[in-house]
Image (cartoon, rainbow, N blue to C red; front, side, top):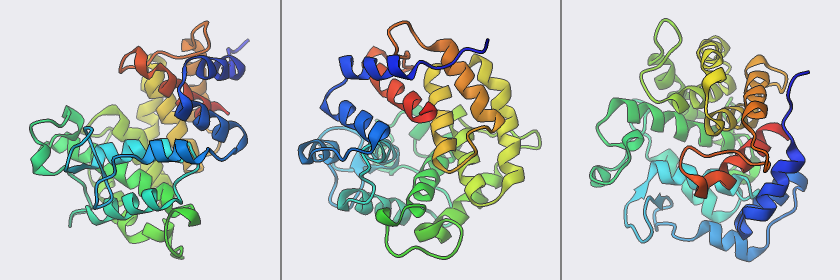
Length: 276
């Protein structure tokens, strides 16, 4: 018998170990229950005047990577249509460079993690995939941006199209990419929504080879990202990701995070989004 994810146990883990924001995210993911205003205020705190979020508390320079992370949290609260998220999405779109890519501000060079380091080609590709992904998601949701464009990609159609072209141009003949693993599934998601199905499938073939050894964090993020842009639930990459999550779920219902146990609840919420 094929192992399956125990969603009830995962829910119990978040309830037992999560904070108010975590539990509100769980309620939205499970039942679409709107979070209380104080939870939304807490999730949106620290936004820079220009619209993005800094990478560190009290920082003055907004970060592409930190803004994408915050948008993921707000998406789990059903809050992409609120003014804070809309300002962040507009800021993100405005940060796109002429070649369709994204890069962190040079002022962050001394503090940015390796996956967001200014001037690094691998970091640039990852940030392009991440920013392109969230603008793709926003373009699917009329609450998250202005009047929807008739083109593929919705409100941010031109921006996302340019991002997709930049991502596709970096694919190697074997479907791999010169960046971090996460850039793969984020790129596949962007390309899928741009109807660049061949390029997306090439990436997913590489990901399928990696899935049996993927960490729970990566398997959950991969599946949640692909599902968020409408990849069919029974598609083979998603089936393999759920299998990996079933294999790695702990007896307490949670999953171990790559970033330390303080992020186990976050990884578990991502797994719930991937499997619900």
